[in-house]
Image (cartoon, rainbow, N blue to C red):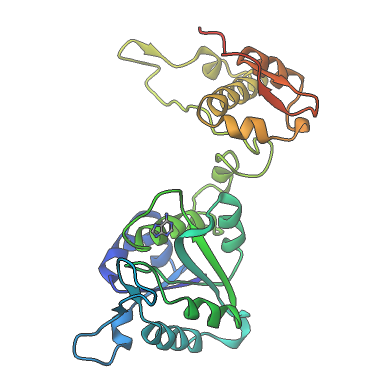
Length: 272
Ligand code: ADE
C-alpha cells in the first residue's frame, strides 16, 4: 500500500519510522512518502496561510500550495491504481472508526492532508472531491492543533490491518470494534506470567485449560467492560447479538430488554 502525507511539519511524521509502521515500511509492505507543503510555495516567506474571508479569528490555509502539491502527488501515481483516497483530517469530519480503517486498508493508495490553523480553503476539498474519493475524517470529539497527530493515529490503525504486518493474523480477531463474534463489545482484560504477582492471582479459569469456560469468561468480561465504559454500545446493539448466557450476564449488570428487544438500563448494577 502507498501512503502520501502533505504537511508543513514533515518532522512530525517521524514516528512513522518506528515500530510496527517503521518495520512494515522497511519490509516494503508500506510505501510512505512525506512531502513538505512549503515546497509548493513561491514567495520568499513560503507562505501557506492567510486571513479568513468574512473575518473571524485564526488563519486559513491558502488554496494554491495545496493545489500544486496535490496535483504533483496525484500525477506521480500509476494509472492502474484507480486513483487514491484523499483523507482530510478535520474535527468536523465523519468519525474515524475501525470499520473505516478496514475499508481504507483495502485501498491501494491513500493521500493525507493534515492542516494547521483553522483548516484549508474549502475550494481545495471541493475541487478534488469532483475528481477523487475524498473523506473528511475526525479521530474524536476534541480539537487538536493540527491534523498530523490524527494522521499518525489513522496510519497505525490502517497499517496493522495490512496482510503480513502483524505477526499473527489472528491478532485482530478479538480487537475491540472488530467485526465477528465479539462485534460491538470491548475486549476484556488479559494476563501473562507469573501466575501470582504482588499477591494477585491470574483468574483461575484462564489456567484451567477448559476452552469452553475460557470463552464464556472472556465474553462475560467483554460484556462487563462494555457495560461499564461504553453503555451506548450495549444500548445500540441488535438484540440478536446477545445469546441466553449474555442476557443473564446483562441482567446481573442491570440491563433488561425493552419493548423493541434492545437493552436498556433497568437499575444500577449490583455492587460486588
Ligand atoms: N484536526 C484537529 N482536531 C482533529 C480531530 N479531532 N480529528 C481530525 N483532525 C483534527
